[in-house]
Length: 154
Ligand SMILES: [Zn+2]
Image 1: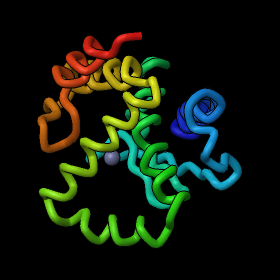
Image 2: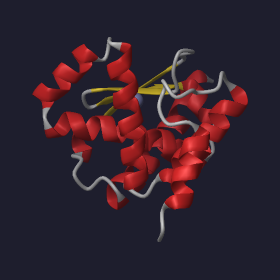
Image 3: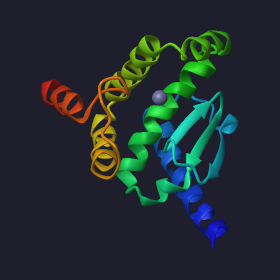
């Protein structure tokens, strides 16, 4: 049963990654990406170097929200692929709350700059409805993303 669930999530995530790389992350080397799917309660997704750690809870996300959370992870990965050395330093600094907050908020901002803000918002809406709400120290909030999307003139 769990195996089936993992396979379904894996397929959905792979097609979301294909969509993102084709449209917004042409700088990422797709071949290097690996996934590790397991039951986990502390996060939906996390990225270490070229590996995305995925919680089985992601199976509850709709397609748009899944793309939103993945977009955030792919910005982390794109920073890593750009400069593994700098990324090592970033991971070291990540233990400092002020730095972590700044980094996570900048990552969300880049998601919006890459034209994926509405997907990020969909994820934040799902997350805040079902889990403890994200606040400003975790990244951009639902309110902030909404406001930023309203100020973007297409
Ligand atoms: Zn992050």
